[in-house]
Image 1 (cartoon, helix red, strand yellow):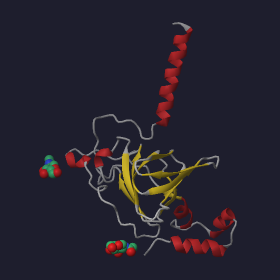
Image 2 (cartoon, rainbow, N blue to C red):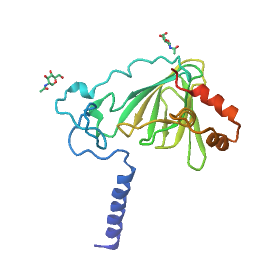
Image 3 (tube, rainbow, N blue to C red):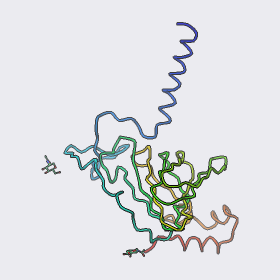
Image 4 (spheres, rainbow, N blue to C red):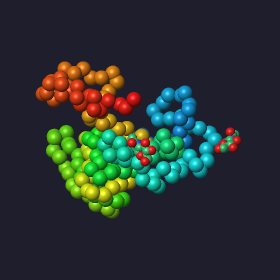
Length: 218
Ligand SMILES: *[C@@H]1O[C@H](CO)[C@@H](O)[C@H](O)[C@H]1NC(C)=O
Ligand SMILES: *[C@@H]1O[C@H](CO)[C@@H](O)[C@H](O)[C@H]1NC(C)=O
């Protein structure tokens, strides 16, 4: 082999090696493996069920706007493996997010997926923050797209006067969502006040106030 061929082979091997890290969910080993959510078998993903039908690959839940009359004025409707059992092992899923005027999808991360949003209606201020604390933000309108890299904290705010909605794609069957404020101030059991007073450099009163505001509704 000529030297340049060796270079090419090494480059290809590097690409394959990197791809195995970059892909969010593991590769599938069969055509389909429709999730049996009721199975007691624990593995990475869900056990496959044997009696499957077209409905295992179908979901109508993103067709209509969801109600947004909640604390944050925004509602995420997931279309993950939990709604579409046929997504098990396929490494993709979707969601729809509806926002009231002023509504926010507060800062959160998806530990297992990169996210790509497409604006259906309205206008949103969106952004993500890198591990070097650099903010990348943009105002996006109908038909436009923004991307949130895997694992990075991001948000969307409807700063407009009309409702907004997006359709979202994820490169994971179950991206997982961790909301920063809820994780720190509304976990169960709760994080000790002293951890939060030291972290945020405020007093116990402020911490208790946030905790009471974010406490899960009974
Ligand atoms: C498979 O599921 C269908 C309905 O989804 C049901 O009518 C049928 O009896 C099931 N077959 C078996 C072998 O369980
Ligand atoms: C939101 O609005 C719907 C329909 O108008 C109503 O049934 C529901 O109780 C409201 N939810 C809250 C949290 O106010």
